[in-house]
Length: 315
Image 1 (tube, one colour):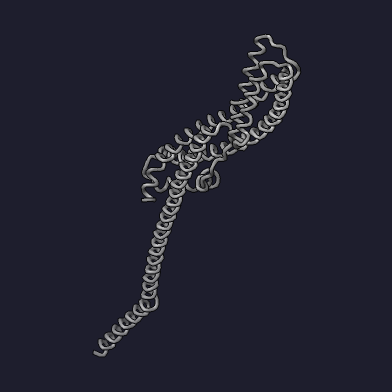
Image 2 (image 1 turned 45 degrees about the horizontal axis):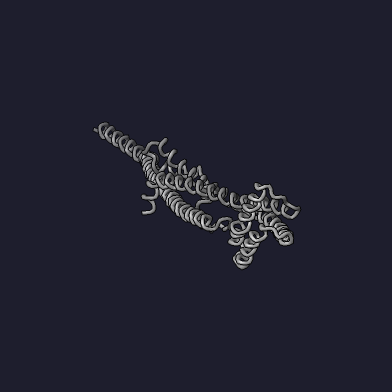
């Protein structure tokens, strides 16, 4: 009996010892590990969620940045189209004025072309091209590249044409100044020779005197006409009639003295200078007409290539 009680007590003590040891292991090692693992898992999930959120915000920011760039790009493309149309209208107006002014030098009215210059000379083409390709990423890349290239190429061509026109007009003004200076010098010499010939012919009682005197009367009528019109009138009313008379007299084997001979030479020279002035105006008009047509063609290309872009971002 005593032995059984002792055995039972020993057994209970062993079970209590084992339970106490398991509990301590669970309490000191397993539970803290599990809690740490849960904490780490929660922290990891929060971290992943933050990364996903940051990534999403970053993608949204990039999309917004692309939209902002293309909105700006569309705006300056649209402005460049209006710039080009406005300046081309000024060119057409100048062509009309040249038609009605003869040899008169007329300045070209300048239209604002700031946005056209930005696209042609200053814009970061690669940056905007990448934004363009990313925004239309689902479309045919080759087609997109051609569209974007046409936009910038057209702006570059139009801008170059406007620059060339300005340079040509400046060169024409320099040439015209020199031609008019030589023309006026020749005309002064012609006037002296004309007066000397009148005196000589009157002394000789030559019938040619009366015909030249009629031309002299035309000179008095055009003195008060403005400079450009007077040059044309001098050509039509003085120089050409004088040349006609002298050519006719020469064909009839009339003998010329030094004054008449000099007058004949100076008349030809001065008419030649006038023709050069007139030819310079015709050449500039031809150039302007050709360039204006080319600008029209490039505007059409620019409008077509940028239509989709402008419809999305400007409407």
